[in-house]
Amino acid sequence: MRTCRAGGDLRSLVPWLKEDDGRFRPEEGKLAERAPLDFGDVEVLSRLNDEYAKLTEAVVPSVVSIDTAGVKTERLFDVWGRTQVRRYPTQGQGSGVIVTEQGHVVTNHHVIAGQQQIHVTLHDGEVYPATLVGEDTMLDIAVLRIEAKREFTPLKLGDSSKAQVGQMVFAVGNPFGLGETITQGIISAKERSLSDNQRDLFQTDAAINPGNSGGPLVNLLGEIIGINVAIFSQDKENPGFQGVGFSIPANDVRDSLLQILKRGRPIRGFLGLQMRDLDMVVRSALKYDGEYGTAVLAVTPNSPAEKAGLRKFDVVLSYAGVKIKSYVELRRLVEETGVGESVAMEVWRGGETLTLNALITEAGSVSSEATGAESTGGKTRDAGEVLESLGIEVRDLSTLERAQGYSGVVVTGVARGALAVDRVMAGDLIQAVNHSEVRTAREFLRHLAVSAAVQETTLQLVRGGSAVRVTLPALPRRN
Image (tube, rainbow, N blue to C red; front, side, top):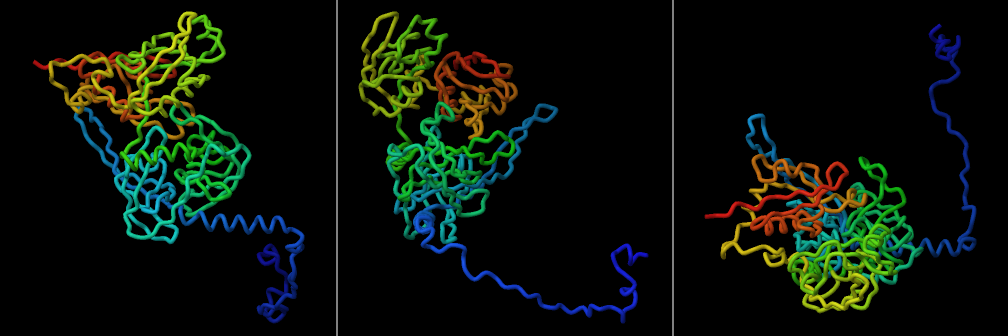
């Protein structure tokens, strides 16, 4: 009965009645000997196929895989209020591209941020340590130098201003740690924005996945026209490519790269305005019906803007002869202006048009004068002491958070007994210090240290989806 249920019959119960002797008998089968089409039938596709392979062969040797390792520190409190520090290892992975014969590599800042060890794997499989030359947190660019005495094959940075929507592009990188991978697509759109910091990005449908960050987006000549930086994914927990990726234009990358190689950091112009686009509410409040401009909501004390005569509720119409359509455009023009350069601006104020001249300074060069702080009798407070007294710990926004449109820094914790307790909470999104917008944790801490040393400091933040304004006390004066 068991044999029948298994599909057998009576012969299978009697060994000498079996027909199969257990030996395999070859099957006859004839395979096709020629392809359905000749190369002459698909001549254009054949040439295109060869050119794709030639492009890949030329580009891939300049693309590297980046592996990072570090130790992250987390501050914990036990039930008795005692502080404990926990350290745990972190690892990261990304891509990069060699841009100089000396072995300089461009990648994303978020690929190497907070990591103590950086190793680069070249096309031939050789692995070398790399050192950080400089970083541009605003643009999300970092420049590394490979520690090896050998020849390098750099890729040329192309002119991204010539890129057109619809043109064919190729993304090269190390997705999911699989190794060298090249994907094809087009430029889907230009001047996309993930945040106030990352704007004028290229959007592409060339497949970009986790691990592609920092790799190049190249044109048909193998020139770098962008550095892959982010993807848009509706699944925030498990992000994956959905046909929308973003790349930083090569012209922006080149400017930042040259400044980092020359000075170790990027240099950008600073005006000192908090602005807002002219929507219906702003136009109604200001009684302004002009076609161009961006509204001034606040002016940083002792900034170039204040010294030029700009005031709250002014409307900036033009900057250096360029008509302003949005505050993002004005910010870009200011950042591209040389430090020490005088720029003429047309400003609308209460129905009148004025011409003001501002002397642009360097962004990030915060001093007591720039923040409107008073002197402490010739004595300066140590920045570390100020920050320790306030007790605020923050981090930069992740790429996904920027992709969702957030800007600022996120509070990760507040030390017990610190001045910021009950004022600032973990999870707060801090967007401005004394009306000056902050983009990175470093920028926030620098502004905070200078201001809180001598005066009350106002923080504009978002908590639970609502805008909140918090005032921090100044540090007690020394005797």
